[in-house]
Amino acid sequence: MPETAVKQLDNVSVKLKANVYFEGKVISHTLMSREGARRAVGLIYPGLFKFNTDAAERMEIIAGLCRVRLAGQELWKTFGAGESFRVPERSYFEIAVDQGLAEYLCTFEQ
Image 1 (cartoon, one colour):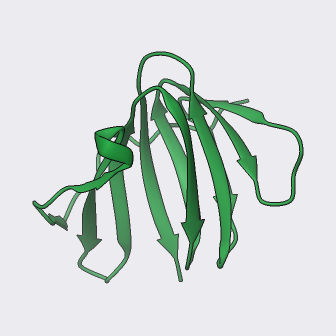
Image 2 (tube, rainbow, N blue to C red):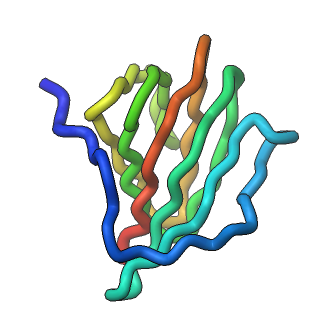
């Protein structure tokens, strides 16, 4: 059963310069909470993308659908709005959007 999707974040500052990856097919903005938590909110256009991680991440899908394959796994898993997955630090994941847009919130875990 899907988790409840985040609808709004309060009391955050936003870095206005966008993080642009894969020739504009993945775009995000960095958010910082008063407590120092770092997040990114963004869009993924159709395509297949590989991301390396330094810190552990929790990816929450806000809207749309995507398929994800974590490092060392053979099978892809589909995630939709309200669902999330975790990626270990110093690892990678592949994410694919087949149609439309996937919107996400990434929380960098400390």
